[in-house]
Amino acid sequence: MASLIRFNSLILPLLLALVLAACDGGVLHKSGANDSEANVSGRQTSVQGAAAIGAGGVEDARRAAIDDAVQRASSQLKRSNPAGAMISDIKVVDEWQDGEVYRVQALAVLSERQHCASPYRKKIVATGFPIMNAEQVSSSESQDLFSGIPREINNRLMETGDFIGRNLTNAVLYSRPDIAPEILPTTGSAESVIVNVARQYNAQFVLSGVIRGFRTESTEFVRGTGVLAEIKSMARDFIGRRSIDFDVFVHDGFSGVLLFQQRYSASILGDVSLPNGYNVGSERFNDTPSGHKISELIQQASEDLHRLFGCYPFTIRVLESANNRIVIAAGAQDKIRMGDKLMVYSAAGIAPSGRGLSDQVGILTINEVSANTAAGSLDSGAQGVVRPGDWVKSFGSP
Picture (cartoon, rainbow, N blue to C red):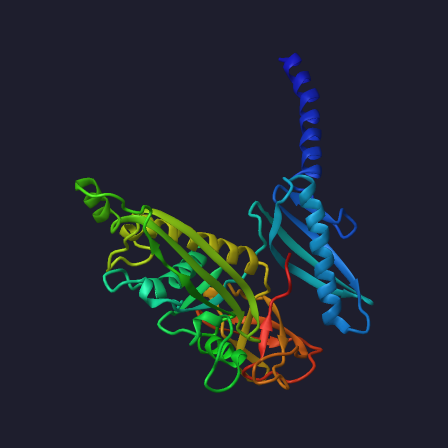
C-alpha cells in the first residue's frame, strides 16, 4: 500500500503537468492581440487585416483592410492545401478603428472548387432563346427548346446554391436574332431594355441567348436501286447527323453592359428526332441522342456562368428609405444575415440606361431580416441621402 501511495504521488503531478501543457498549446489556448496573425484550422482561418485611414476616409480604409485580410488568409491556407484551391467565403466578424489605422478580423474558408463565390445568392432572370431559322425545327418536334434551354441553365445555376433564378422565358430580347447580342428596342436604348427587365425581377443579371442552328443532314447519299436502296432511303429520315449551335449572353442588370458571350456547339449522330412534347430537362428528353447532347451543352454553359459570376460582388436595389431605415430587395433567401455590412451606392446622376459609376454613400448594417427583404441603418460617417432605386453591394471577395 505504501508503494502504491508513493507511485501515485509521483505520477499525478506528471499527469497534471501534461494536461496543463496540452491546454496551453491546444484547445484551451486563447489568442491575444499580439499572437500570430492567423489561426489556421484545416480549411479555414481567422486572420486580421489592417490599413491606414487616408484621404479616402474610413470606407476606403475598411475595404483595404479586408483586402489585406484576404491576402493573409490566402497565404496561410495555401501553405497546407493543394494548389488551385481558392477561398470561397470571407466573413468579417469584427472591426475597429485603432488611431489612424482601421482593423478587421475575418474568417476565411477554403474551397476545392476552381472558382470563387460570394456568401450571398445572386438573382438572375432568364429570357427566351429565339431561333434564327425556324424551319429547322418542324411542327412535329419539341417546341420547348426556345424557353427550355435558358430555363434549364437557370435551374442548374440554382442547384449550386449560389443563385436565385427567375424565368421570363416567354419573352425574347432580340427581334433580329441574326445580329444578337445587339438589341433593337422600339423605344429607349438597348441598355435600358436590360435594366428594365432586371428591375422588374430585382435581378442582378439578365440571361439571354440565340439558337443559331439546329440543322439536320443525311449521313449517306443513297445510290442504286432495289430493296437495300429503299431501306437506306427510309432510314435516313430517322438516322442522320444534326448540328446544334446556340449563343449564351449575360448582361449586368444595373448598367445593361454585356458581361458574357459564348457559343456552344455539338454534332448529333444517329436518331436525330426530338418528338413534340419532350421538355428540356426531362428524363425522356435526355434519353434521346439530341436531348442528351443539348443537356451536355447546357451543363457546360451553367458551369461557365457559375465559375465566372460566382466571383462577382453581390448587388441588390434599395426598395425603401426613411428615417435612416433602409430596406433592400434581398433577405434570408439571398443569405442576408443580421449584422451583415454592405456598401451603399447612389443612383443619382446616373444616365437612364444605368451606365456610369455612382458615388458611395456609406456602409449599411443589417438589423432586420425577412424572407425576401432586409433592413438596416447607415453607419456614422455616411455621406449623402439614400433613396429608393439606389443599390447596395457586398465587399469584394477573391
